[in-house]
Structure formats: structure tokens, C-alpha cells
Length: 75
Image 1 (cartoon, one colour):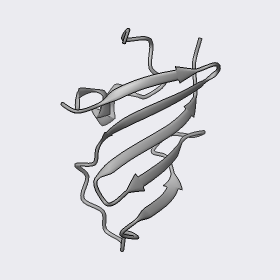
Image 2 (cartoon, helix red, strand yellow):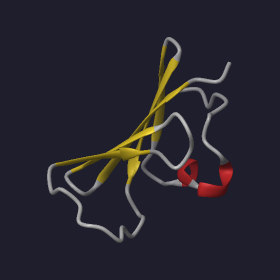
Image 3 (cartoon, helix red, strand yellow):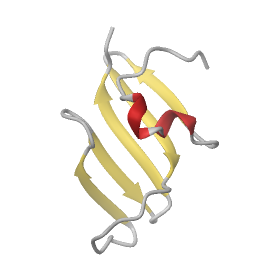
Image 4 (cartoon, helix red, strand yellow):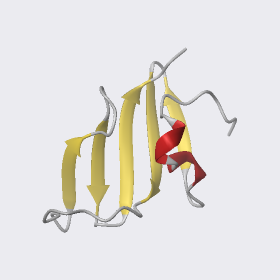
């Protein structure tokens, strides 16, 4: 897969996770990586949804292990 311009800010270092990939489907981006952040709240063991670290992003934490970020692609 080509490394296209991501809409994620580099200060969060998500694109440097060793097991991550980015898919573009039309005008949307789906970014999948292993979750390495410590959460200060109770996380649902199966699926936990929250707003992203940037405006317009939706984060889904699956099985407390995989972080899926949905966003609009910047062209």
C-alpha cells in the first residue's frame, strides 16, 4: 500500500506504530493500529467508541487491543 498523505497529526505518533496500516475508500480513511495508550477510564472489553484526538475523527477500540480511526481524507 502506498503511504499517502494522512490526515493525522504527527505529534500523536500513530503512524509510527509497528503494526499499522491505512486504507482509503473514496473520500474516507480507515487507519488500524495496535493501541498503546493508557486510558484513564473504563474501556468496554468488546467495542469502545469515542471521539478522536482530532476534530472529525472517530476512534473505535476493538477487544481493548486494536484501534480503528475513521476520518475524512485530505486530498
